[in-house]
Length: 123
Image (cartoon, rainbow, N blue to C red; front, side):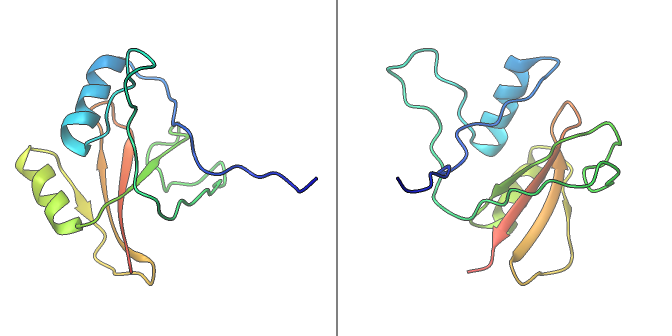
């Protein structure tokens, strides 16, 4: 029997003070569909692409607040257009001024203060 490995991420689950409002924010501003109410509906589908799975040291400041133990990174096709869209909605976005060998990055926070990183992969 061959060695089995996972084929991708099947979901991201985290606690929220107001789950419905936060799900709505992600749907409105980032296009992440809410979990369907029944099995007949289709859940959010992502484009195939690179996914980074990276545990960080417990004392990292990369996520922001010390008590923040996770951060999500979304791939985007057009960083400039996405940032403009978010800023037009009144959402503060901090672009990383450096272009890295693997692409460009920007950072924002959802309404509950969770860090969200945007990544435009370099093709």
